[in-house]
Image 1: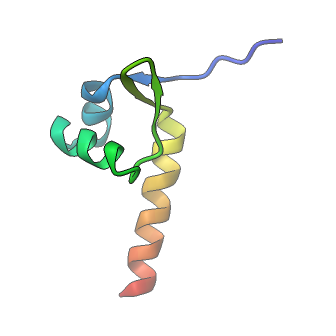
Image 2: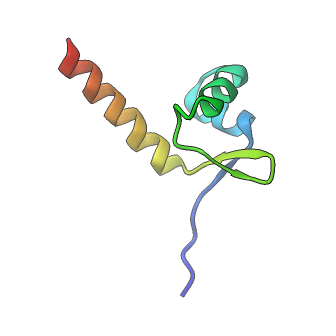
Length: 65
């Protein structure tokens, strides 16, 4: 049985999802600061993985405050 997985394909899609500039997404992906993967040369991400990552970043920020 196959499982449908939503994928954001390309830096522009990830940028739109996060509300960030495309260059920021590319830079942070290159630095491995985002939960992304590649299909060929395209940066891709699962929306659920990005949501979890954002949540964890928020938690870390609140703990440091």
